[in-house]
Image (cartoon, rainbow, N blue to C red; front, side, top):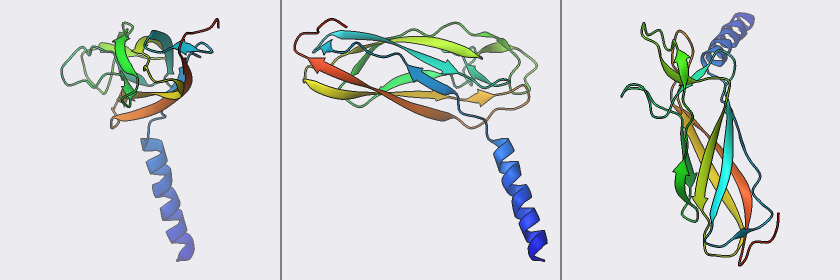
Length: 158
């Protein structure tokens, strides 16, 4: 009886593991060694989707799609501009009509306003998305990624 219960639990855990989509990996380009207080800072987020998975492009092709979106977390840094790349044609979630999606690796340039307060700060990005494959879509999720930014009165050379 114990063996049978363990087999059933193992099968259920395997089914749950299979039903979860792998999170995309996110990296942020390194900021300069120091950044002037109140200036604008340009960084690039690189998002890599696992083979066979897509995230909807931003802006989405239809109103029901949940696109990849980059936001700055917290109140110190302010988002000035996010430049989303164009998506590629993809068959997503069992739909008969193709849509625009991101797959493989994409680069998302971001410009933020640096705070006036001096010191080493955590610049935190939230990358939200909904992953799909050719047959189904998974619940929306997000990845949090941060970099240290040294805010100084006057920026030195990198």
